[in-house]
Figure 1 (cartoon, rainbow, N blue to C red):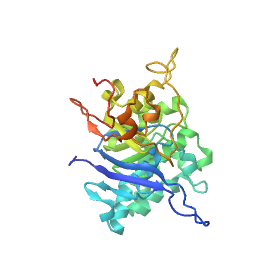
Figure 2: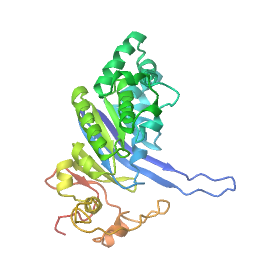
Figure 3: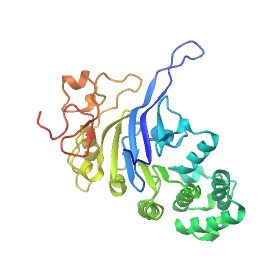
Figure 4: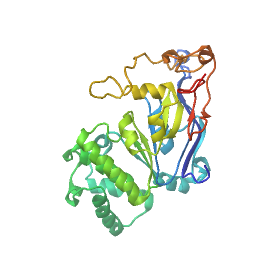
Length: 326
């Protein structure tokens, strides 16, 4: 889209393939393959999938912590590769990362005040008096008492540490937050508080979120759009309300079937657990075919491409989408 704040085009990341010291070639692992994404200002894009599907690798490429083997990330239409050193620093300030375990991501030797001041000084060049004023604003914004500024990370609870992690990301005055499993390590009651905080901050600062999670209930609650990843690829994408109500890809339906409800094994009944394919030896055709109850010969030999679903604001990579007459 032309009004997209952030776009990712054909992002691809693989590991291995080189030879070891004995001359043996290491297996080539395709972590992310040909991903296209866009996110609008003030909107939330949720990315879901099982462990190992490539969600976190994608997140790291979006924020610049990992470099793609192919493809590029653009902010306001300008590719990261086109920015000079100063521009790259500016880009880094505008896209910030919130880690799953904020406590481990905070420097244990520094007080919270020093942790929060670092991005203000390094990325924005703020003077001391401006940083002091901004510290108070940040603590108020994330719901923490100002006296916590003199504490160290080990003195914080899990919820407090995650709020500090969010405050550190906000310190650079970003437009986009990449949130990688930001509430999965927290108790359920604290999860709700942090999610409410994120929604309040989004409205206050008109932030765009890329929200990475394996928890579909959380993603449904916070997302405007959702992308479903499997085996390094996006297999379905669309508005959260439509996607959760009527999945088009059988993998999305399997994920929904795995949501536990009282008295049920899943949202729509039982779902069979089948071992994931070997990433070093992907199956021909659709990578989900070995797990799909409706797979046909075409699925086993021809890789499906993302295509629009008729009459809906949705795309899916499936030869025989769920609910269509074949």
